[in-house]
Length: 239
Image 1 (spheres, helix red, strand yellow):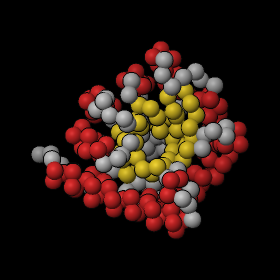
Image 2 (spheres, rainbow, N blue to C red):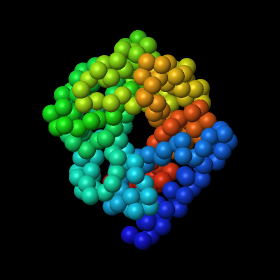
Image 3 (tube, one colour):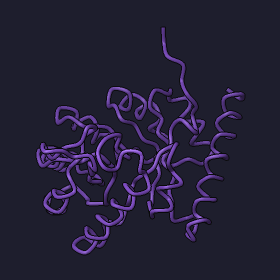
Image 4 (cartoon, rainbow, N blue to C red):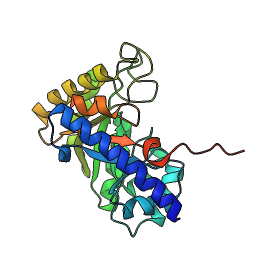
């Protein structure tokens, strides 16, 4: 365990240095950017080590992995973010542990989240996942709402009991006009955030950037970056 803690501490320090340098280059205070560590495929023991190293925000993208992990770490002072595509039949489980759902992308999901939040007396923070690669269907390859649908969906979240509209999230798209243009994608997300805050001033969270492109996200103005591999390493495939 000591060896793993040393490994994670070293990786975390390198990521923190990258974030600090990116903030300095952008003329931003370091405290403006929150690091969320994505712990998918890694055990609860790693989450405990990260918490011991000062990490307070962790994320998962699959409920079947997140729910038991969150339960095992319930004694820790952590905020769990759900960042994957969320089916309505998983909402009850996710609301049980997630403080923030970053992948809100359709009205039916908003309704389900609100109903469960009200039932349990919880408040759930919501980020609208924006699909910058949205095609004719209005949805992206990895979920998300098209930019043109943000205003309507934001209004629905804002008026739904038990939900708090926190802001926007995106994943740099692999196709479409922003493919390979991460900084342009994040700049577009910031423009959408500016528009959103005119109607919803408190919805100022912008979640963008991962291990490979966190610098571009910080330069664009992201308030939160989601980093997994750079902190936890590449987990060997089973079999």
